[in-house]
Image 1: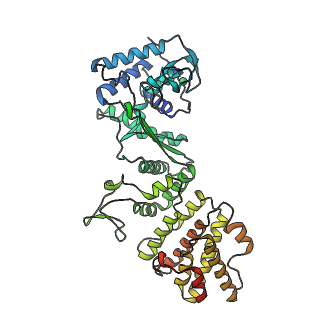
Image 2: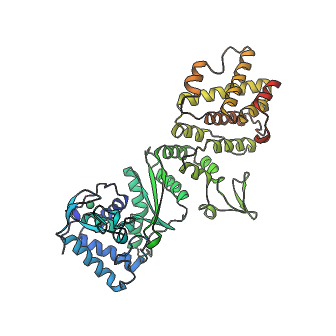
Image 3: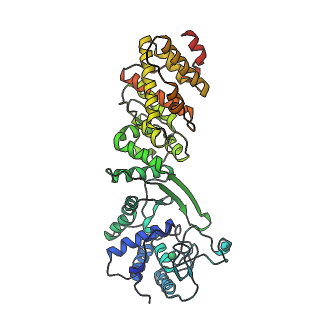
Length: 462
Ligand SMILES: [Zn+2]
């Protein structure tokens, strides 16, 4: 029988997310049962797996816990015997592939770990071992992995980088499991309401941000959506890198309602229509609830995950606010996005706003909004935007205004700096102009952008 090694196990991160998640669960459980040995805890977990949950094939492939040829009553004794052997092993000394610790190693195939080569695929391993050679501590931690997972169709595991992120995931999975097991209401691994991992990671990010409203978390989220099941083994990875997380964090803390107004209209829902008045989806004359569409594809989420800019979507959203005049106009989402994700400096954003204000003053003086808006909205090439701006600058100069719209230095250093996509400057400029239109209750319906005139033609009329 193995000694109680529970106190000697290190819970330092190994870099392997599965081992670390299992370790997080083991650490939590060891604090709940301070009088239990490591074998007691393994037995406790085995009882949960076999007697309460069953169906852990997506985690452990071919282990006594799941193997179809192992009789139900043999599953727990066989598992315990196996761990006894692993902990008592005195051969194969070496360094663990996960944590680097020197120990008597065990081959961890798919029966003990996820997504590794084993059986016929031993060519994955250095010396054609039957699996990754890992230390007993890591085998034990791996065994507790199911407590840290969510069922989402496939399994979901969130990798976080901060201590608060870890606390969040532990509370959401391990602690919740433990509470349910204690109340005898746990019948299966925890199930998420999501089966769409792309949408799920944004919900998890929002929950994490809301959990720590006073903290400015510099988090980096990665969702592993995987299965270790038989022949259908698979893994998809979705990431919210730090800039997008910071953007979401600032947005949710200061303009959450506007964020959801923006995001919700970008679902794809067949047979239904977005209703601007009600700010919701209507199907067969009934307003849909969020639960009915939260797994539908969402263009905002998918663009953010694909690293594509959402500034054009924001621009269209803000324009719809001006046309509708019902929602509050709050350009902070666009500003946060420009700062955190598009890497615009405050000087550049301030300059774009200043130019927008001056163009708006010109529009008011001429009492002609359409002419300038169509010119800027219609700029679909970089040269068209530059031409439009230069014509506006020239007109301002000819009108005898003392202050220039933009100085040469500002133009060169801040307006179009190297590495900045010109279209982002155009879209932010329009967002600031729409804000002025909204403040002054001027309708922004200037006709379809598809049939706007070329900027050159418009200017000749001016
Ligand atoms: Zn190890």
